[in-house]
Image 1: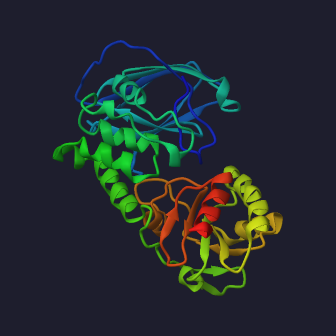
Image 2: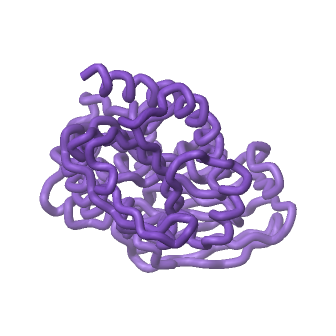
Length: 337
């Protein structure tokens, strides 16, 4: 089966699951033998970005690495450039099969010792877009501890209600784990930016180096598109926004594209290519993956891009995570109201 990943990742593991029963121990052990096109590095990080393991492996050579006793939780496991969020416990994890760094879809990796992760995957939302994702309420009582926050982390849902539902399934001890604290923070952030909440007033610089604030456009409908030059889906979404802008533009409507490029040169090059006819701003803090996203990500509660919000004339959020025709529908609805 294909493991779910965040939209800004370009590759993924192809997982096949082998069930052998949990073998609990006092530490995490990662062992295996993988056929490779070239030597690769196996890396394990927690969701705060701390590296717990980083070891080189060679093709068809057995490897065995031990990690000190871990808190059962979500970790980032990488083989080469392929990075995947996975729930791990203090068991012996075995990885076997073939990894193709040039065409990851042709890879086939067999894992054992990750039964808890497989239980979490059973409850992942089936919806494709983050703004449509929800959680089957039957999951309550089916998982334990921070497996609920792990589900939220892996599912990457950008609406408040399903995240809050999973938070309410957890006890106080589970809430103190890394993913538990992450889910609490995310739920709090999403709560502040549910529909009807006041939009965070940012101030950023445009291409001319002039400071522009969101509040400068009070009295207009404002569509804010968070993107980055390196994000393929973001560039595709910009092209979808152009005809909508041309059709609906007027004195009562403003589009703002906020780039999360860490390097201004990349942003300017993309602007030359895209030729956007609306306000363009740069947040040079950049898009941040992990437990501490940048200020705008925290303020608006988004963890993947593109991310589009619609703000009414009084500065309240009236649409979140809009895409394609949903943008046009939201603007027309706001005008009719």
